[in-house]
Length: 226
Image 1: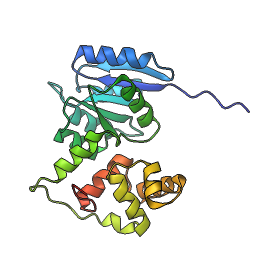
Image 2 (image 1 turned 90 degrees about the horizontal axis):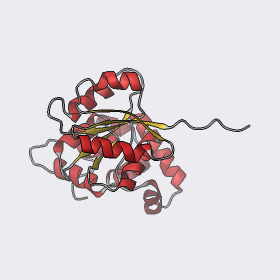
Image 3 (image 1 turned 120 degrees about the vertical axis):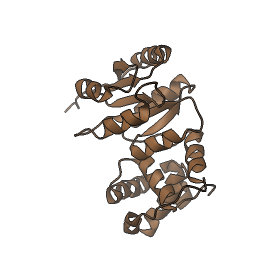
Image 4 (image 1 turned 135 degrees about the vertical axis):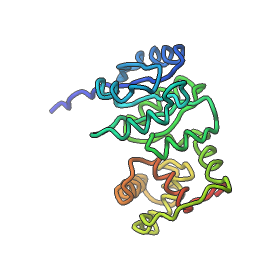
């Protein structure tokens, strides 16, 4: 039996700069399997646009003059049903608002000066259910933010439900390692790593790897510089 063709990844672009919107739209629309279903110049009304267009992925600028990306992200992710995956767009290597967005449930972030291939890959990776943890800026951002002395860490009792092996895997996930790298580090099959990650997400009631990283840092399981 021939499997049905996969639907295109539906993308919504939210950015106050028309050149950014136009450039991203032209680039992504030219790719097989990606369809830009709409654009918006501000975070205001994004929930209605999401409800109407039903995108799979939203590229969300974090800094916009009226309703910013953080507020819009929180509103979208609070919508009933299965919300789209959100990639935050920023021009800054270290932006604490991005950390807040990750903590709210965004699936990662991308610098606006990323290469076209990085943008395309980001959309495909996030649409496939993974998160953007590979770029160097993600680890630098989280490490910088949680290292600030005024930030207090909160013990997370949910981590008590994890096995010792799962905690080992979580520490490596929080350091930005991919499944293949974790498998090499712990001498196990890559599929076993995937199973550990899946079980941790279920036990901790988290959405994806990004939220695993946030939980690991906020609980103090992993500390900046480790």
